[in-house]
Image 1 (spheres, rainbow, N blue to C red):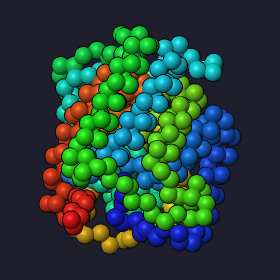
Image 2: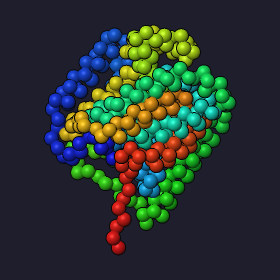
Image 3: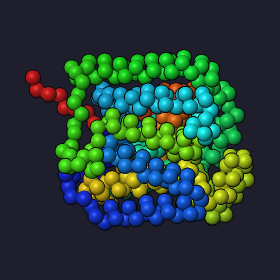
Length: 405
């Protein structure tokens, strides 16, 4: 798992005081404001977002680079960390979702239809991951970490999400299954066993492929750490995986549903479009009760928006603590074009597929949704295509150099 190329990596460097101060101030101010203007629960979700940003950055927990290095070079540490995350995730989520309540709060999973739109959307999203240089969570945490290229990806992500909402009636009319919950269909125990078996199978495949390609498991390259690595980073991948699970579970407990990311991008795009005279409120997507209410309400009342902003600020705080907050403003033209194209594909694909690597893959699978598994297969295929396209845009495909005998 490498940090984005546009973030200067200076292991053990001194703390960056200005971005540290700015991020801390905005985190505290935001939490105080949300507690006053909305409620304490919304403020807590904002803080959870900041903690997610810290965990994503310090563990360099990206989905995009993990898939790319496995596809291109057979290294599976990142994928195995994801399987650990999912295995612990279903152990926590499935019993709560089966019961329907968690700590007295009614809870429900992100269970969506599985069909044509998920296959097409996830495949497009997978290509976008590799061209844009990140996934949904990856885009947010790298923007917070100081990646200027990813700001372009994020803007186009929002544009693509908005276009996707305009086209949703067409895609949802195509063949698809009704939402399928494996927890309800198979029962709690059977659903757990089936999911754990699949996670173990995927992890085993990565081990076999890696050993065949490299003669053994490749040791992860660990950057020299600060004297306090848990505060300043870097974290082991497993620590990042477990932190994301626990924080996602906290999101479920506080908001009643698992962590999501990209619905906020569609909302931001729709609100921005309405400001320039586009009547997004009349679109079918925004005419449903929940979406119409979100469009009419301030962004501060939207859980996903609040958590997304928290992720950006948390990653900024982590980058400053690590001494790595150093934005690079010169971005090669081909890389910039890839960011634009990739961002559009990410946004459009996420809407079609009812979510991204977080809402559909991570939270979808731990919700027991069949569409989460369909998303994984289709998005992985898209990542294969996207990895092959990267060199056309001057983007790196990481491969280990063969060692001399």
